[in-house]
Image (cartoon, rainbow, N blue to C red):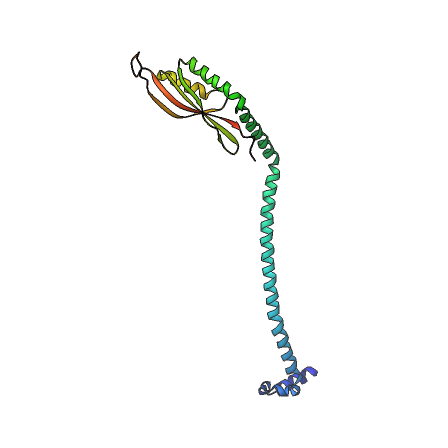
Length: 209
């Protein structure tokens, strides 16, 4: 019966009274209930959507962090899986580096290198006009020692000399070739050639900071 009374009072309610908030106290209970329901849902719905929006933003942030963590995990997992392989490669590189260092002559070995170059030249029938040690050139990990060489001989003998010097056990590189005919009192000019070449040998720079 209470429901019927509420509906009856609602039917007798003049909607124009909604504009007069001073008469709220005289509004029927049904109208008050409806107004309260509307106010409640009017506050609840925006709050709900705002809360959902915050949750979505938080979820997107968590997903982004999750993606980064997954990428980091995959990288670390791959690194861990290949750790032994990397260690093996490191040992091989260290051994190769040590082998190269052993091929670099020390200061006391330069005279031996010059002797080897002289022997190679003599074996190929060349005549040395000059072997001149140049000042050292320092680099970060190694020191370069240029040697200017001037030799005379036939074309094929010069070529064999260059090949044999490059095959020495010590690391020697050859640069700045210059070949010209040799003229003299005897023989046919042009039969003999004079070659100027710069040989560079290297040693480890153990004085680096």
